[in-house]
Length: 175
View 1 (tube, rainbow, N blue to C red):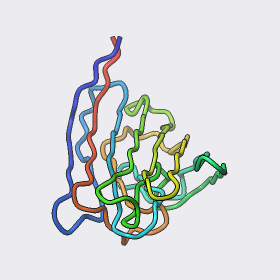
View 2: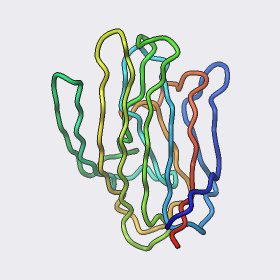
View 3: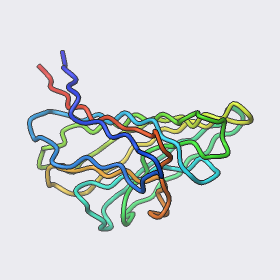
View 4: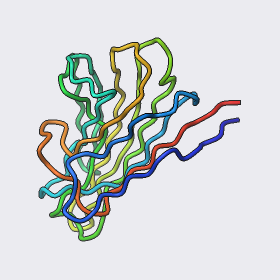
C-alpha cells in the first residue's frame, strides 16, 4: 500500500511563466509524482522539458513514443544537455481553454543510484488532431533529487507557460 501526499502546487499567473519549479523537495518519501495541466503561449503543442537539481550537464537520456490516432513515431536521445523531455503540452492554436495533461513518475528519488522517470501525456485539440506521448528517461546522476524545474519547450528555454497552467508535486510513501 502507498500514500500519496501533496507537497506543493504551482499555478501560473497573469502574463505566463517560463518555468514551473519545485524546490527544497523533502527527502522523506520513496517516490515522486508530478501531475501537470499545461498550455504554452506558442501556437503548437510542444514537448515539455524537465531538469533535476538545476543540472544542465550532458547526463539526460530518454526514449519516447508518440501517437496522433492516425500516425505513430518514436525517438530517443542520450547525453542530452540542459534537460530531458517530459511530455506534451497544448499550444495556443489548440482548442480554447483546453490544457494538455502530463503525469511524471520518479521512483527512488533519494537513492544513490541513477534516477529514472516515466511520463505519459496528451495534448488536447478538438479542432484537428490530439497527440499522446509515453516517455521513459534517465538522469545519470547519483545525487538525491531536491528540485525539479519544468520548461515549456525541451529545445528552447525562452517560451512561456500560459496563465492557469498548473502542476502538483506529490510524495509517495510505500508501506
